[in-house]
Length: 441
Image (tube, rainbow, N blue to C red; front, side, top):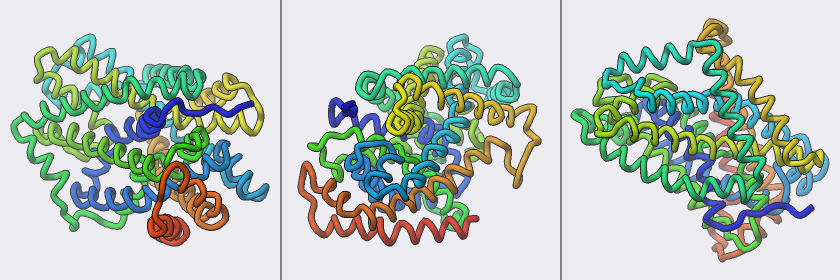
């Protein structure tokens, strides 16, 4: 059976960037940045994204195109049977991420309904915060929305690479950027909003500890979808004409730009309304409705925002589900529909305890973390970095000849840049990631 391919370079770039331009940028980036010192954290995040992140992006895409299979099949084809099991943790990591990510995606769907019905039409952030807190503590309703989000993700992925993933990315991702820009402009017009801009861009290294550096690395990997097999899987659908280094640069650039826009969209209004910018996962869902309440036609505008935020969340979730689907299709020869359905059911079941950790199971903790936080920490701070180490070592040493061949297809790459990528993958990335990971643990 012939493997699917992307219909166009633009479609691939938007789909790959969409894997990051979802809740990772708009939901997670602002509050994690605020929790770790603002501008100082941002500098570390940018440095890691354009060095380690960019190099590993090239490596993963090259491995995927060389293997023409998902992450497990690629490791096996290029490294032999002994590497087959190395890719399994990436598949499991995507499943775990989707369990808690799907819960937040469900919150987005709920906010579409609440905004459209005018239930959030107030500038009082205390009222909005209380409403959000009451909602996520409920034992049933958030789970229903979580299931609905997984079903929507299933519908897109079951449609295939071109007709499902690429189509939704090409049409709706540009609309999200436009709307984000409009909301940034409106938010900056609020009295006191400039404090949020200064907080985001003014470095204060006294507030950045080692934990902040670990979080910056985890966020960079999360935002760029590295270490989890997504880019290896997406790279397997690339044709031989695509120039991987240039394409990887576009993907990283768009993802980082989306993170910056997410920060500029959420943090200035948070300061303007006197909110705690490091309030946690609910920041986006509390500060943005307050902004809409200041805008003429804010109810319609807010509804549209949460609809497009849902689309952004879906472009991320489809990439996570696609890793599992590719595994079942390539390795077990399942039909695409069956390969989409089984992991979706697992994601639904795993998301139930993650959702309940905000309500009835809030006191169920391990190492001081709720179930939701444990899933987030396990994937962002442990599984993704470990996946990055393994991928870097494999691409920089065991499969470098194939990687080098793929990086020079479709365009020229200077010997210096080529050796720079290998140096970063074979030496710098494993050492730096391992050192930070061990120290953090």
